[in-house]
Each structure stands twice: as structure tokens, then as C-alpha cells.
Image 1 (cartoon, helix red, strand yellow):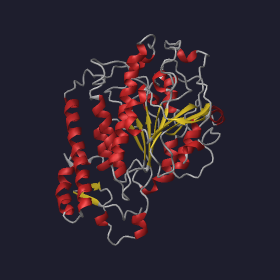
Image 2: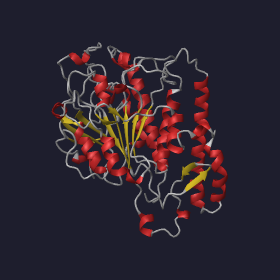
Image 3: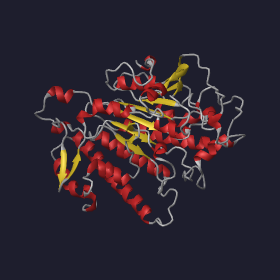
Image 4: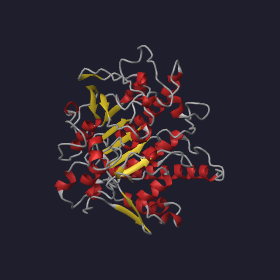
Length: 454
């Protein structure tokens, strides 16, 4: 692996990769220095679908739909797809999308998508585990696989673009529960293949250890930044002014994450492990900490591909959404009680999730790359769910937002209306090609979302 552009701070076996610093590029090949930063891919997943009237343009003030409701919603034969007339219209920020107001030129809404579905597997489990699948029901049958749980898009892309990074891909979950509530299919969207999970990391401490330290090293060293700060101060004296500022922000970010992990470790230490609590971490702080750890991995060249589950599917246990509700609530249960004004409380969770997506985009705008562009300029960030309306368990009319410029290859600030029933594998094929893969099909795709290109 050629790491000539990547500089490190080392101390007693710990290694901390640095962001690109022009002051350290003396003597390096000019073409290498001028090369574009690597493209980054984030696939963010939200659980239990969405309140469709708050998300899809045109439904906000329409008559309330007659919810099928109940917990057997997926057994109904009724399907109520949005009758999309294909085309491109200006982006309209619905009430659920309001947190993206500062990012209107950075995002595109795509409607009309649906995912592969096959009866027989729990709809939530299939929603998560088949979200990025590589098998259609027919392909699954031909291969002797019960359900379309195949090798996922992130793994396929990671295989192709991960040769220059430490990890081909990174799998992150924001499931803060202390005990398992559901089978593993509900808490993962990344798979090496049928029944071969690419396990997501949900403990910030374990994620930090995996990214920056040897597996057992944390048992001997309390704080890696204490070991490298002295070296960093020495290095800083050799840097130009702009690089000193970059280095300062970088080390401040490392230190901030250390402090936040320590704070959460104290919270965990106070939990009575004999009587496991449903969730012990403040939800928003937890999600944003996992987000910042992922961004550090990008900034330091550890990986360029990451999946990010903002929460687990179904998981019938209470969650505390600080600043949203005064007491813990059950998201999944609420999605099946949307009659009357019931949908309004569920939409508050949709808004909470959208705020976390907006935080990710804001942070990526702030991070500068080697050529002066932002990380968002060089990235592709999708936001969506494996279910449309969570009340009816629909696998069609999936919510989907795509952000980032992918190095100028995407025109943003629009609403792309696909023909109703367009498979989301078409979007995944488009994402793969935007990430540099030379493939003509993915899973059961029938083409690409050509309107997404500039």
C-alpha cells in the first residue's frame, strides 16, 4: 500500500493518521499532491419507515389516509403506491425535511422507489437486511437462499475502492441497548453474503479502538492523545499557518471525542448490569458521537465507505429522545398507532432523525480536503429506510434523500420523481457507478437513475 501522502503520529505502538498537510508534502510527486481527494460514501438507514404525509411532497395537507394499522399490516394485499409522473421538479422541503433548510443546494429527494420483497420473512428484518441486497427473489431461489439476503452494496463497493484504505468498509449502528431484543437481522444492513453478517459496531469505545488502536491496546493505555500530543506540538512548529490551523482543529476533534467517550463510559459504569436498562446513552449525543468517529475515519484515510444505522428495526423497547419527549417511548409501537393525531408524535422522531442527518452534512461541509474542497463536495450520502409508511409495512414508496456532489457529478437541489415501482437497486447501481465501479447491473436493476447525474 502506498502511504506516501499519509503522515502519522506514533507513540508506544499507537498510531494516529493525520489529515493532509501541505507543509509535509515537500519532495512528493506533484501529480500525487494535485490528485483529487478520495470519494466517500455514507449509507444512512432510519428504522421503522416514516410518516409519509410529513415526508412526501403533496401529502402534507391531503386527507388522512385510512391506515390499515395493527401489527399484521404486511399481510394485507392492499398497496397504495404514489402515482408518480416521472420528471424533475424544484425541491420542496416538507415539514419533516425542514432540518435540511440550510442544505437545500446539497440534497436531492428521490421518490417512486421500492425494494425487492419476498413473503415469509419478518417485514422489518427483511427491510433492514435486504435494504442493500444483491439478490432478487428469483436469484435467491436459484441459489437456494430462502430470502433475498445477499452480499450488500457497501461490500461490493468496498471491494473495488478499499484497496487504498485500512478498512474496505465500516459498519456502524446507533443501537444503544444493553441487551438484545431482536434477532441480528434487525440490527444490520451490511452482509458479506447470505447469513454472513458484516457486524455493525454500536459501542463508541469499541469503534474508537478499532479505528485508532490495536484491539488489546486500550487495556494498557487510557488516552492515546496524551501519548501523541507532545509529538503533535513539535510537528506543529514545522507547519505553515494554514496547516497549523488544520492540525489544531484535528487535535481538538480527537480530544473532544475522547472527552465524550469518557463521559459516556461513566454513564455506562453507573448502570446496574444485573437489571439491564433498555438504553443508557443520551440518544442525540450518542448518534453525533458515532457520526464524528465515522468522519474521523474518513479524514484520516482509514476507510471511504460506511453504513450507518441511526437505529435498529422494530426493537420493541423504549428509547429516550432527549428534547423530544419527556419520557421514553417505543418507536415501532407508535408507528402502528397513527390514527387521528397519532402520526404527529411519530413525526417528531422522523424530525429528530432528520436533524442527525443535517448534522452529518454540516460537519462534512466544515471539513476541508487536500485540494481546498469540502468533504461534502467529495462525498455521496444517502438517507432512507427499508419501509415506506411504517404503519402499513409497505416496501414501496421508500423515503430517499441523496446528498453530496460526488466531485461534481451530481446536480443537487431537486426532486427527482421516478416512475412508481422503480427498484431501488437502480439507485444502488447509480451509486456504484458514481463511486467509480464499472458495472452495468446490480441485483435486479433495470437501469440507472440518469437524472441524478449533472
